[in-house]
Length: 145
Image (tube, rainbow, N blue to C red; front, top):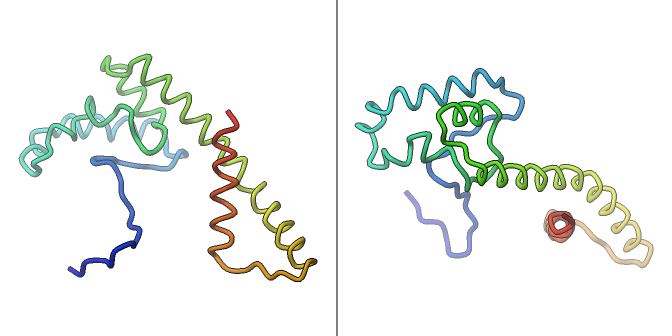
């Protein structure tokens, strides 16, 4: 396997993390959590990180995204979901909702910015210009809580 050159950004996630879409049914997510716990013996035999796979360890904050309602229901029934986990979840959902709302606003603002710069004779183009604009806009949206 080739080693990427220095300075190349690569994806990184906490391990383990099973992800799904928000629209996935709560029953399906609940069943997946149950299946992981019910099969811990097999999982333990196949990985050196067995303890981190147990839902009571992997199913609590900190994570990269809010938890699905089906996972929360499973962890609540098991007694693992804590008030601290719920506070984290509430804050994370609020952050996510700010970003969801900011995305179309940023697109409109960027088009306005590009047009204003064009009127001055400046040419703004390329993915890097949008990325820099979005990252700045995003930070303001996150901080707006």
